[in-house]
Length: 296
Image (cartoon, rainbow, N blue to C red):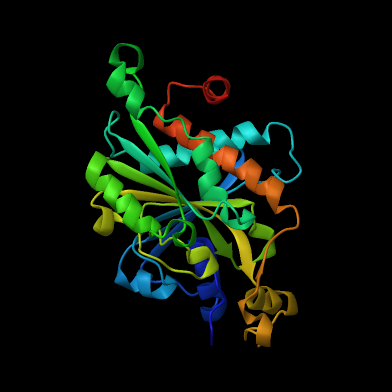
């Protein structure tokens, strides 16, 4: 049976349990639920090759944060979302030296809204590498950060992975944080969840256009990936709506991807939340209000 398409480890685990039975223990995988700033957090650890085979994802940690209330802009949801995401990202960065250079890479196509998360996060990234180097007496307390909107091969003629790899060889960061759009299996997770993982990412995976992978093996440094599902595969969506196991044959529609009608505003909100969360995780001495001033 063709598997429903998803980039989320949380959903891959759900699909495995649906096929094997909820009481069946998933080998090589540990999962736990928690809460951060009042928002649900699910952590999935893939421990070995058995877990990799079961979920079809590399060994590592996958953290999924659900941004409940973001669509309706409830109360202080923006601030809580930023703080929660920053806290989870800080845990994945715990082994990176506090003053170690970090490269933030925004992946995707700025001209296609569901794929514009990465490039738009670049606009909200506080870059400090040049300031720390040129004015250490003023900015020496900041972590050096560089940022790149890698865009896509169709607009640059260069694979984003090749571009980031070349930049890593030049500036030698201690870590890369890559941001990209993903695909989900269900509508209710679109633009409502954020996945963080320490396994890296394959640019274009969310739209089925797999390129050079970004991970420790290809870049030589740890790669933390942050992804947001902005599309759902049409066949996967149809199977879920009809409550059937087999993916339907959609004919000419088999390559369609579905995205919310208000994707413009949702991508705008999520880009700012992710960008600010990255900034707070890398510069823990700052506040959201100070970021607003520095990035304005």
